[in-house]
Amino acid sequence: MLVGGAMTAQRLLKCKTNLAVYSKLSEKQPDLVAAFWKYLLVCFETPRPSTDYKEPNDPHRLDQIRKILSTCATSVGATAEEDEAGNLIIRKEGKGTGVGKPWLCLQGHLDMVCSENSVVGHDFEKDPIEVRFSSDDGMTDGWLKPVKATSLGADNGIALAAGLAVMETLPNHPPLELLCTANEETDFHGAEGVKGDSLKAKTLLNLDSEEEYSICVGCAGGFEHSYKLPYEALPIDPDWAIVNVNLSGFHGGHSGVDIDKEYGNAIKSLARILLSTGQTCRLLDCQGGTGPNSIPREASCVIALPRAELENFETSLQSAFDEVKAELKSTDPDATLSISACAASVTNTVPPDVPPIPTGEPPRKAAKGVLVGGLWRCSRCPKCQAAAIAEGEDGSDKAGKSLKVPSTALSASDTTKVWKFLALVPHGVLRKSTEVEDLVESSVCCSMLALREDHLFCHLFLRSSVTSYMKYGQRMLSAYGDLAGAENVENQVPFPAWQPCMESPLLALCKKTHVEVFRKEPKVYAVHAGLECGILKERKPELDCCSIGPWICNAHSPDERVHIESGARFVKWLSVILDTWPADCK
Image (tube, helix red, strand yellow):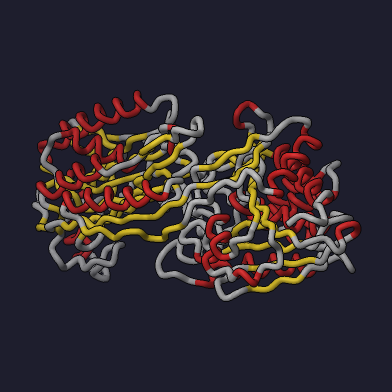
């Protein structure tokens, strides 16, 4: 730590890769921009999953990011305190010409969406995210992306980094409080726990937008809805083949912002191709999606079917997938189907060198006339279970099920019911605005799928900027569940829409400074996603809110990236807003 000053990048950054990236990012840059990248890389390196991103909910999952932000805040002369909801509030008194001006709240969230491709194996509770330069969209080294195929966390490390950077470097700024909320990406627990009198400011600038040269003045509300579809499980015929079907490489994206871009949904596509085969098969397992805020990039299932039908099954499945691939060639060019057969179920033996999961190796022959994407040991079929018991294993498979209990699968009729249920479950844009051009008013995303002990679990996220349609959406989803014979888990994590106020003094200031900095008018818009402004205005109705941010692409997905030059322009604009903050602003 520098004596009497902020902590250096060399002290803060632990990954050599990120330190090398910082060296290039900060070269010949103003102190503000260099500090912004320093703190953003700190956010990338610090694990910060939502406390409930997987069961059980652990409130300590955000301790690491709160601790490092508090340390950095102290080093720049600010104070930091944690409230009962797990939010961190960092405050610094006005400086220079900003002394005596009204407080301004900068706001973002602590947590990030934890999304990765299935083969990555990133531990979001322990592993740092290392970054690299990328040349997407023909921009040579124009972006920052993760080294591994995981989400990046620019959403919303951007806000945390920008808030600390202006506190560290600006000679003139008003009294600032940086509100860092918990669990924005899951249940808005942090924002809902903010008490109105805990904020000194009456004006709040949210830093969680992803469009450059723009000011967001409103957002959709929403809720989550789950289905529990019951099924009957019966023993598996020992002579049937066990096959893994996996879809991967779909584009994915934000389940609200990107819902109108017609990206493929891996869950819906899996149901479509399995339903199209028209063959007798029985479902042992299925899963898809990584969280409610993301369009599913991957989905897979394990099925049993008669050996004699295996070759025809593969042929018809590949044909159905080819149709999907052709339809999605411009949006999901990397979508991939892989089919793998359990070695024991197709060869009557369990070779010792066969892995326990599909490897993704080049296809090879598993049985006469059957081309599959490698053999694997499923641990679920009767032959694998018998072999494991004979080998003296502990009597349980990787899912914790006893191997001494006969292997079961859904009945053929219930398996078909699952594919039909998923084929018809709603996904996509429900209604476009009739007042604002190109604005999605209402949508729903089929985001997660899992086969549980006694039911199929399917999770949806519905958004709307119209309260009455949101209420209709609740009834619509429940009606579908009732017709399908599924249990409805209704109205989970509801949050209100943020209604635009075009007479906002903060909006006027943001527009004025945007023209001064960029010599052009900003786009003023509402976003089809959930920002915390609506909830915070409920807690403190007099809050005047707007939202700005740099250019971020494909948030909530392993293709998430932040545009480097845009990041520098963003913090420059923010600094001008703070420098010209009017003393009489309400």
